[in-house]
Image (cartoon, rainbow, N blue to C red):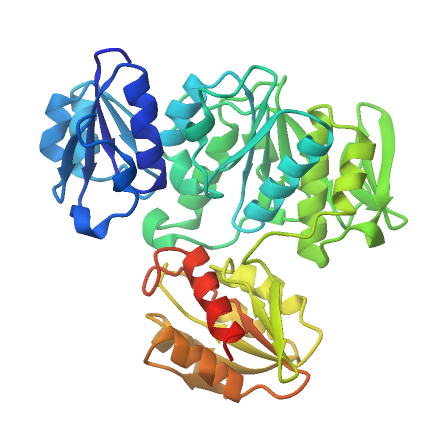
Length: 448
């Protein structure tokens, strides 16, 4: 990198994290974003004298000045700058690709439509219990590149990886990678399900038989991808006993590999509840034990791990109503999983930024515990249309603020009810990310 001119496109978390790393390697760094400075956060942590700032402009003309282009996940490779760079023979790398090339540690990657954050966090906790040096990075919040130079060859980089990040890889090669599930999501970006599946499968593309491809046996779409991955396939299943992989038998979590079986713990001892969390636990079991963690370390962590913020998180009980924050429910399948865990009458808050997917499956999955829904955000009209087509009448459409929507949910809840925020949509119409949406929800209900 020394004396190379590197153009970093996208000044969100990963771009801001990449800048000082590139600078420390002697690169001349150009920082670009189509948004002006007053619409960006975190730039105050970067010394203005160390970088060339080109904000509020498109990157197309800047490509001429760069030897290398590094992009944030939100920046598509379909824009004109990418074609121009390609024509000039210049590499365009995702932040995770650059980080991987710089890192000495072993990479364990987790992707899928849902469950990534829980599985990634749990996998990291198991490695920590096993006293293995570990960094939990990627789409989970802390960019991979933030710790890429810090990690030693003995450390594990447990990385949550999105389909957006995988579009810009070329050499990225995890020792073990898991595909948790695939359902329709991000259709505005990927256009078709086949494109979306192909993007997810890129996590495996550089693996060899010495690496491990962990697949969900119970997900038909994922299972059908087994012949498209080059690594050694290891399944996980909560429904079937497997000859090789992580599975449930006689209500016990079992891990079998190369002829040896180990019991881990009872399913009832796993702290995080619900069928989807059992799948997440099985995936984490397979990933960590393939990389040397003991059954004892896995069991200890499964018995104590309480889950992650913004994922079916009980916030408080006010006037007999339990408020549950599932802001991480950013697509219908994720919200369906939250609905399945509800055991009391529930008012459901739905709506947000439109990613282009269908909501039909969401209403089909409603259980008798769903008593009322509140539609909000950009997708409120589409949710109303889907509800009407399905014959669901118990809804209120809120055209105002997020706080107004939460208050409306409260009005429709009685003693013994849940109010569940699980929007089945992204947050970008009202918030910068799902974390902010979840935090605001918690502030509102704690002040009731």
